[in-house]
Length: 224
Image (cartoon, rainbow, N blue to C red; front, top):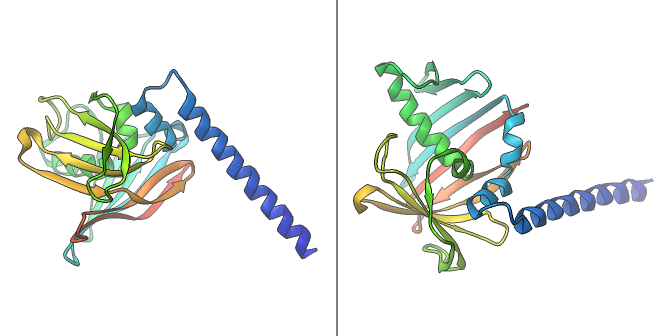
């Protein structure tokens, strides 16, 4: 009986692996998708529309000191966003025109959710994309595919920013380099510890090369 149960579990596991491999091959070989779209799709972009709510905690640690800890609840269907920080909770409805006291929350939500769902931003946002080339990743030194994502010089909270993203053959981001407008600041971090949440793939950990900077997500939950 135990052997039968084991074989059934292994069979289900192999079917799941084969389905994922087939899906990955379909994304890779689809001639109708641009590279940035393949990155979004590889991270489960098509599953996002079925989600009604997502919760997560955004954390930043510098030299073993926790600098930021923001807990978010995003009611996607109703565009309601709530932030809990230092035992205080604030909420707002996301729309084109925001009151001044809500812009503080919105700016932080844009930043934090951008890290959380950056592969989807490649489909959602108005960005320009370079040609893909093979390049050495800044932290690991591995040869990966590299795409530069550039944002317009006007509009948004950080106009003119760009990102060099390094991704593998399965179109999963492994590292990136953030470049502020005008070249005033650069930061390279890893993309690691991926986990699947109802089909939405999220990198939970980002580290600098020396490990002194960590940006990571905890308490992630997704509701259909």
